[in-house]
Length: 480
Ligand code: BG6
Image 1: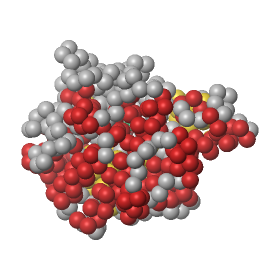
Image 2: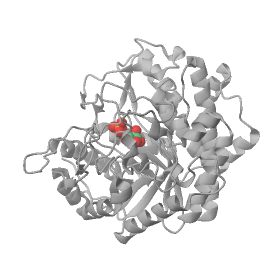
Image 3: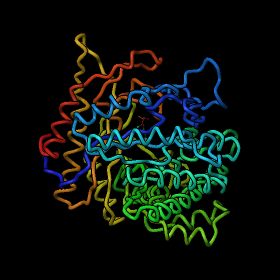
Image 4: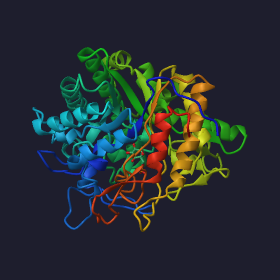
C-alpha cells in the first residue's frame, strides 16, 4: 500500500456537526432548528420533516449523543488519538434561537467558548462551519428559508457575532456545509437542510426556481461573511464547503460524455461562484433561459467578487456515474435521472459506492479548477458495528476503507503536488446520521452506546480503528 509523510502542520483530525451530536436541543435558550423536526428513518425509509414537534415521534437530534454535556470527555479521547484539528459547527439556534432575534443568546456563546478552550487545551485547532443543516425553524416558517432575501442579513449577523466573539480562538471557518446538495432540487431533505425550504406541493419547475434563488442569496451571504470576517481578523482562513463527487460517463459514447459534462456544470457551479466570484457561463445561460433567480442585483455581483474564499473545503464519499439511457444532455434538469450504477464498484450497506481512487481524482480536479488550497473535511464509511462480549469492536472494514482513501490522498499530495491542508474524516465519534437519523449507521473510532430507538447508556468506548488512526496521525501518514 502506497504511503507518504504529509507536510508539517498537516491537520489530521475529524469532523462533526452540532445538531448531529450535541443534543440538549432546547437547553440554555437554544431555539428549534430544522434538524429538530426530523424524525428517525432507516436505510430504506426517509426521515419525515414534521411541521413543528409532533408528540410521540422519535426526533433523534434532540438528545443525539449528548455531546453538550460530554464534550470534555469526548475531546480528551480525540486528543488521545493525536487530533490536530476538530471540525464542528456552531448551532445557529444556540446563538440566535429564532434566527431573526436582535441580540445573541449569551449562554449559547459561552458553550462554544468553553468547547474551543477545551480544544486548545489539547492543542487541537477548531475548524468551524457556520451553517451545517441547522437553520432556525422560525426562519423556515416565517420567511420560507433562503427564498427570502432577508435571510442574508440574518446569516451575516450570526456570522459577525461568531467572528467577533471567537476571533482569537478560531482561525479556520466555512460558511455553508455542502451548499451544492440542493442541485437535487426535488429532494425534501436536501432542500430543507441546505436552504430551509419545505417543498410540499410545489411543481418541479417551482422547486428548481426556488433552489436557484435561495442558493444565490446563500452565495451572497457567504461572500458578505467572508468580507466581514477578513476585516475582523485578517488571519482568518474562510472556505466554502462542497460535497464533491467526480463524475464519469458509464460508456465512452459522446452522448454519455456530454451528459457527464452537463451534470458537472449543473452541480459544481456553487464552488465556482465561491472561488471566482461569478457564475459560470453555462449556468447563467440556463438560469436566464428558464427565468429562474429573478432577483440578482448589480451590487450582489460586486459582493460576490469581493468575498471570494481562501480555500475549498469538501466532503468526499463517492464518485458519480451517468448514462444517457434515461436522459439526454439537453433535457437535463433533474440530476438524479442521469445517475447509473458503476458496475466496477462495491457498495456500503446504505448503497453508497466505495471508490478510494475517486478521492485522488477529486483532489486533482479541484486543484486544476481552482488553484486554491484544499481541505478534506469529510470522508468515511457508515457501517453497522458489532460489540463483542468483552466490549471490543473489531471494525476492520472501517480501517480498510480509510486506509485506502488516505493512501490515495497521499498520492495526490506527494505525486500530484496537491496543496492539501488536512484530513478530517466524518464522525470520529458515533453520532446521528444526517440522511437517515440513525445511530446505528456508525462512522466513529469511538463507539457510543445508543441505538436507532434512542436506547443506550451513552457510554463511550474505543473501537479497533481508534488505535489504528492514532498510529496514522503519530506517523504523519506514513504508517497506514
Ligand atoms: C455529509 C454531511 O453529507 O455526509 C454530514 O455533511 C453527514 O452532515 C455525512 O452526516 C454522512 O451522511 P449520513 O447520511 O451518513 O449521516
